[in-house]
Length: 273
Image (cartoon, rainbow, N blue to C red; front, top):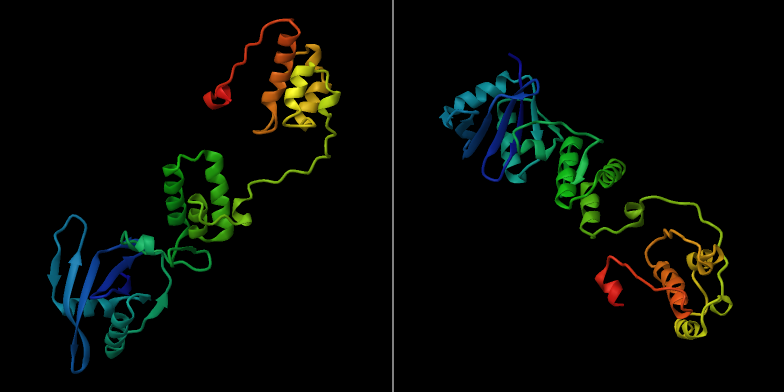
């Protein structure tokens, strides 16, 4: 059976992951000991699924490394990495450095990454792990499908999960990240002066303390027959003056003795106001 070995130096030991195809055969951990001839394998711990951990003779680790088709080194602890390299070179074992997904490595999987890698917390992860992490963040914030798709597009273009997560936590409010869509600018709507609107003088005097001209949506409503009794359905963005449209029509009829006014609003604060 042909296999290759991924090795990563940790602070006090070396992680070994023998790979056959896409399968990890087991987790191995080397503890090195400084000897007069250089670093040597002191202990070799092996972990396999559904099996108890066990120590094997140090010679088994060297035998495995010699049989490996390739030895790949992932960047790790600098001091332990130097010892590992000295060990390999003393036994004339070839190796090469590779970039891997650190999230996959945490699950004993080996995924090589290149230019397509995603930056996250000072390291590199694969696109699948980045997508899973982003989905967890989005679900935690109860985002909808459209928002998730938009964030996935930002991640694909930006190649940085830090930037996207920072956007969700309001830490990276850059225009390139916060832009959701663009619409073509429309022409400026002419507005009506309050003086020109057919309102009872008492109501007009009260309103003139706060404004002199109507807002565009208010002007369009008046021009469409608001004060002549025409029924209207007003749809407009927040803070564009919809409430005053209903107030002008209702209070005008109330003051003129033409009926009663029932003002329905779903927001308690707005009703109190």
